[in-house]
Length: 328
Image 1: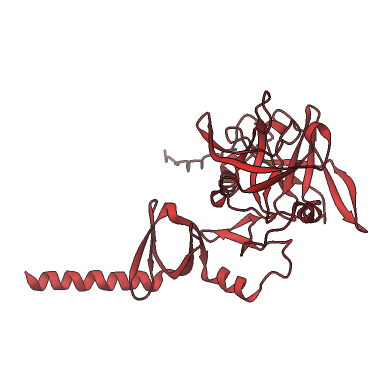
Image 2: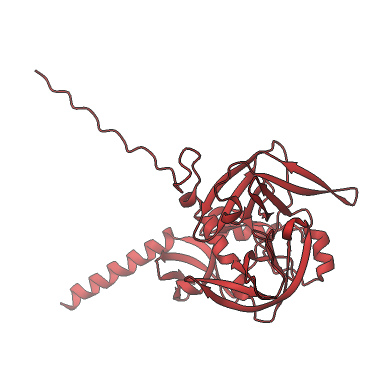
């Protein structure tokens, strides 16, 4: 009996070693800004199991911020960003995303400094039914706004402010495609279809790292007054409305701000402004940026279909069955 147990143990150890050899080297970034590097043995819905070389560690999934492959970590180490205004593209579980985040937290700056840096990234979104705000998430023209800004509309134009000779020059783009919509999260992903056009994106931050009382500011077009800047603090991070959690801020939010960015003092977007309490002052709300990242990573599930606007996703035709030939 002991021999059988010994053989079973040897088999399990050899199988584990095979998995370790076949696993991918990666760095797991944790919520407390710590990280561990090793070989990923398994990824489960509730935990990530990683071999550190001297021990095997099980990390709860809710403590994992992102998993970076060894190639991505090496590339980031060898190619440090030359400018703090453009953040490197990051990956989520090895897949390239269309948004950018900061490899290292940028230093805090004044609102005055940041507004000058972020001027080209914030846009005004216009439709026949009204207007709102938005911001670029990459240089190819992808931008975020609110669903209710574009709801029921297909004729969308975007007003962009390009920097030229030290001044901002306004340009209107009419060829705007709806990429994805999430009515329940009040988010929309648009893309400017302009050949050879490049835009200045903003980096997405981490709303979970925000502290109550932390300073933030919003840029948008309240009541059509483009490029309006309002400053405030985070009043609470967990204000609940209809089952969803929002950031509450004292930064003034008005109609026209919808879809615009809420920045921290490092110039990172931590929320998307989308509503206010009309009979109060300093009671603005924003969608946490973590919900925006989820929407962007799973954008295929919310893809917009021009042929069927009421359906978030166009399903492919099922494969046809091979016809059976029956000999007479």
